[in-house]
Amino acid sequence: MGWFDWLIGQRRVSVTNDEGPPPYVPLATAYGTLSGVAPASRYRNDGEPGWELNLHTHLGDDQAPHRPLIEKLSDAYREFAITLPTWERYEDFVEGVAHVDGHDVDIYYETTFSYLNFWCAERAALDRLRSALLTL
Image: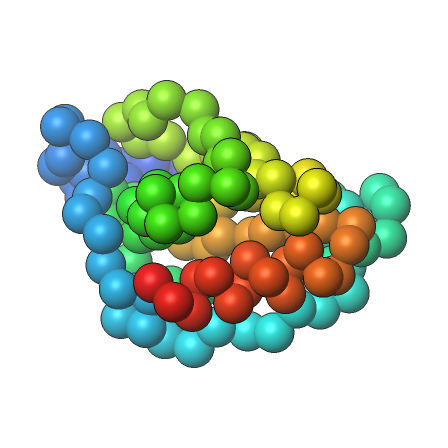
């Protein structure tokens, strides 16, 4: 069995939730500390210059807290007009968008590697989003 087959097998074993995404886990519990906004190219290695905010967690696969956090943010800050695709079991490599103070903020998360990334060309928009996250 190769590494990829092993990884997929582990994932299948750990995923038990057929009903929907996991419940909301408080930000500090799920992610520990929240990093600051940092300079970054869009799509990491190439793309226009901008800013990013990353959140990493030890919770993965069906326990990944990214979607519930984004949904809570969307409920609390409806003016951000956050859009995500419909939840799917085994979801991974999910892209969405938020609109913060007139600027598009890219949302991207992976459940296998368990990180959530926000990117925007305007730092002020990410600073506002970070402040909003801290209120949850």
